[in-house]
Amino acid sequence: PPYMRERALELADAHRLSIEMALSMGVKVVAGTDAGGFVHGDNAREIELLVEAGLTNMQAIQAATGWAAECIGLDADTGTLEPGKYADLLVLDGDPLSEIGVLRDRDRLKLGLKGGDAFVDRMGGA
Image (cartoon, rainbow, N blue to C red):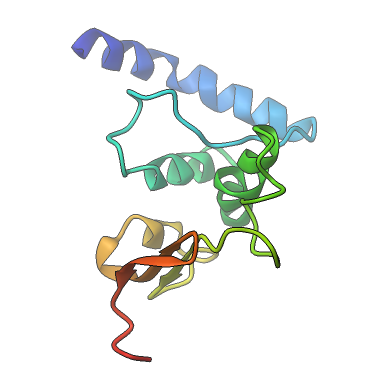
């Protein structure tokens, strides 16, 4: 509803300040949703906003992967690329460590794996 969007915009500066404070104290900030903040499937926008709030590109990616998995107790199975964990990964035409927006550009997604199964494969047999 419009009133929720307006309220979220009113709180944006306070949210950025709280992220800055958390980072300065060594807190691991994590990405996530309780629904309603972003259209389903546009989670990469939150990663961009974390960068805008002061996280490095790497920290923002960790916030959406390993740190988030650790926060909810799933880090034994997911969140990082390690032997024995689910193979969830993206292969992109670009480097999100230098250009975080590449994560949102669906045309630059070349391969997407969830649990080792491809949900996008534009590798062309490479």
